[in-house]
Image (cartoon, rainbow, N blue to C red):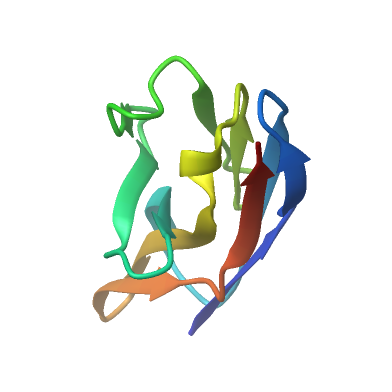
Length: 119
């Protein structure tokens, strides 16, 4: 079983920055990939950024050049540095992890952290 705990959300003005963190804990063989997704009110959850165990990254077009995802494998933690924020970035941000157990691979989600960007 794995738990993901997000932190770093809050209220920021347009043009500002925030850094989100997500720490994984529990029993597992390895974390193969981690990422961030977000869901705005009345919208579907969408991918923001992911990073694999080998370091490959993927970003949504809407955040390229503004957001940076990074991972500290020694701490089982993923970060999302968000710069040049705009009101369209307002959403609940969820941490995701694809985890290998001895019995197979499973997908986990954090509880979410609110990011609000004011004009």
